[in-house]
Length: 551
Image: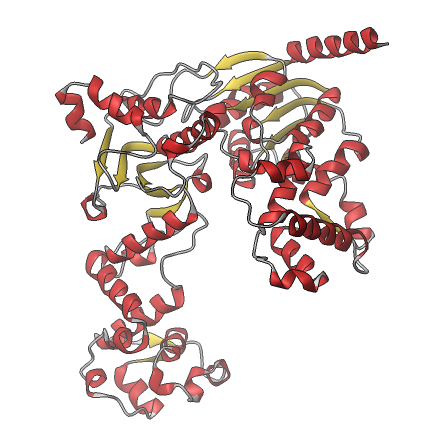
């Protein structure tokens, strides 16, 4: 019996090998472009129905990019025909929709998980139970790794709960999902688990799996089931950018376990020689890395280092990423940017100031200069004038009776409101609203913004994005700043080989987002985390000319 099973598995392995191509795409080499232009196009031109092509990626953003490129390539094809361009969770959910909505079942995510558990067990109110609770995160990781939760709990070095509390939270969470109310709940991991046993996946001509290094063992179990009904398989990814192991991802399924012929994309379209050389140094020390020799673009690029944030040349044209390893360093970057008067957003598009605040300031600036403002601007402006704290002018109810086309100048509003204007206000000093109605730090930030940019630029999308390295994976910017700290809480030099390898991947991913310049903002010359000792070795090997490029 054993030999029969082994022979069966061998035959399946050979079959998969012959119908699978694994595309290794280093940063900027055009994985998505290759998948759309070389793969999807090829099969559609052969007459294959687009609905017989599945494109599965790790994030919604990657899927949306792929759909957009496919629609651009085939304008005569509707987006509905690319209905199998989805994340794996969305792909599985498609087959559960009837069950989810007809049986009053409901999808839940981390934000709701914690609320449910805390509400269901009053004993947990004394525990450290926060958004994206640590215990539930570890539990989800264990499920994705298809491991015993207790085993994964013991592997975690930064335990935030005792084992008793850990198990109690899990028990409470599962009880609530299955029997805790009139509505049953299904989380994203449930959906994948149920897909393995419940879904009969359709026959497909082509299956494309993008960012294959980021999938978990549980998700690969679904993929193994899907491929039985697929004629041709394309896996694309980069194992050196496998930075989601904290969520249970295992890049070895892509690199070693899943059979297939290997193709390496040989040239990055993103950056030139200086950035390429430096990021290859960052890549050194990554364990079990697949050989992916590739060349840079024939263009100018530079790597620079700074000890002071104010030295960074934000006057350079183009887009910027300011990247931290974790959220606390991102918050430090945001604070430094505000002190320097930098206009920025996070990767979700949330600006560095409230749009209503900016609308109020613009309105006040306009009337201070003798211009008129409309009803909506006046309404927002009056909400920030403290002297009108108890006035009807601060309420939406009052403004409902005002025509939308009505416009007012400074004197109109003064007379109409009946406000006893202070001398400063009568003098029409536009910063009056800032000084009196915003926190000192926020007011100073606005003054610096206006001095640096004027008013026009602040109405545009910020060209500076400040966020974590993980958040911008797959994106690029003209200029990238990596904020590295020598006094890192869990020091790089104290990590084991596996941990160091993972850190290298994270910082390599961040550094390779740069198109024109890569900036290293470090707190210490002697120890440039994340480069560590490799940085110093790199410096010693290069002559003064190359060294000046780095400096």
